[in-house]
Image 1 (cartoon, rainbow, N blue to C red):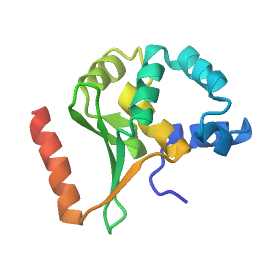
Image 2: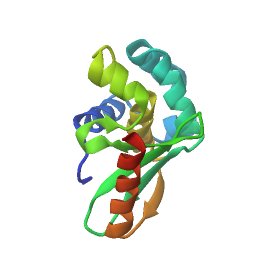
Image 3: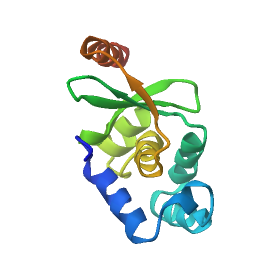
Image 4: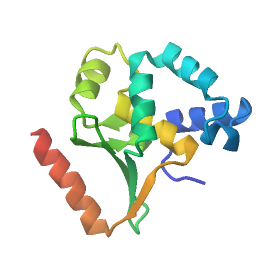
Length: 144
């Protein structure tokens, strides 16, 4: 099983499986209904998240100790760090709309992470524990 999968990832996985998701969806068949469902629930973020997935902008970074983070190359060219295990993204939209105002469930980057998990379209990158710590430290410095 996947370590550190959050409730959102589990929901999307079981939802896609129970509704008949599979190889046909990954190669484009039957996607129109899924896109409509996503847009209904998540609004314009869904379209933007699907675009990020289509462009393979999501990278799963893992270390030997089992730590896992996702990095998403945003449409602006900036890279954001997402922690699916605790439902977090480093982007300003997440801080404002999700954490501060509470009017969104997630940002387009986090939705792209969850979608790329179920469609198995994440880029994969293995790094040392120190490299992963450095990645997170740089992200924290940029936020300050």
